Image: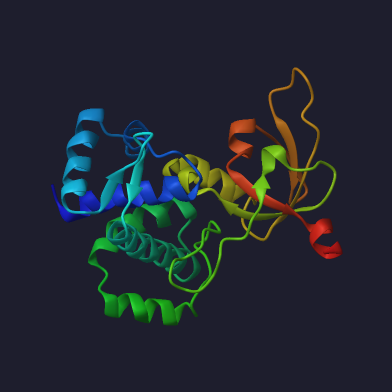
Length: 224
């Protein structure tokens, strides 16, 4: 197995852990779209190389070396996404795909120059912090659990949503993007979706989709 394939596993473990999940082998298989036996074989290699440990609940834990390598991968990917969207004008989904193709070919020199060109951005286009640039991920709550009837600022789209390219395009097209102000309505009994107003239109979001959007209440921030 190539080093780039191993890196995809480290990146998956890093992302799932960052989202607060208990990272089991089965979850990594689902995230990467590979079979359970394939995951087991690859995890054995990562353990042998000192990148992954198994916790008491059979969860996957990155060692210090594994975390450093995973952060380096994630950093390149998010910088590339920022460049591909902000400079080249690609949409979120295309930028995600192209970043994955390019990240293994980016040297440290090019990475540094790219970071300088972009003026050391805090996050990727979806609002997830770029490791190494000195920023901390702001705390928020999911749109599915947000207070209703108050202005909310979109902070980020959770990283696991990025594997659904059609969903990325939906978020980008409708304006559910970091920095946008939205307002959630009350989820009524027997109705399928949560009403969310953004850019003058009201969307009816499936609660599972709304859960992938992190927000914070603007009124609370102004009073703080």
